[in-house]
Image (cartoon, rainbow, N blue to C red):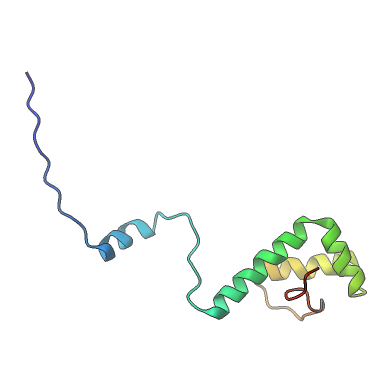
Length: 95
């Protein structure tokens, strides 16, 4: 007959729990302020535009740019690289 021993465990306060588990959390850090949130939204929207050729083509035509120029611009935005805004009103319009 085997005996089962009770294991004593101490409770963790919430800050200690977050500290222990934050390094293993695969989700990205949440933006801390409005500027970080806006930058994240721009990067995500640029990724969507890059993944839809028709949208990319529409932005190229609307801004009188070539598709390679437009693609290069959105790739830089998606990577968070500062670039001269050659595409107008792409973040606020409903295109």
